[in-house]
Length: 157
Image (cartoon, rainbow, N blue to C red; front, side, top):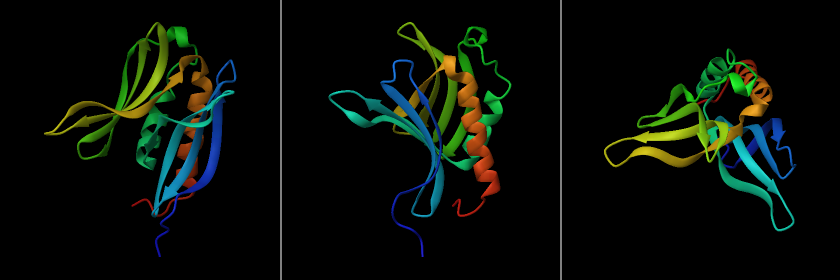
């Protein structure tokens, strides 16, 4: 019987902002028999503590691809130039694009969904921006997620 509820299978790790107000959690989740990686931003403040809409899910294949394109990049953010690093098909008409970009004077690693079909071509609302100054940690977390999927193959529909 296929499991029909959401489950966190493994908490991989997290990246906490320098001020401690934001935390990005990396986990392996399952829903209706599908396993996927989840990266989600959480806030901690006096008025609200909890999950935000900022986040993205990725198949095991996308995680492996992202880990492989991040690995050769330098950990030093000043040595990274703004550019697209990789594009990975999520399903027909939908891709995950990994890029280094600047927005409002701050640089970050963007993982965003790109839709391309008859109805719409462009960015979707799904995605997350990770701090470039944490590149070493980001690479480590993606590698750990990739290793998890490699060691525990199964019901990846």
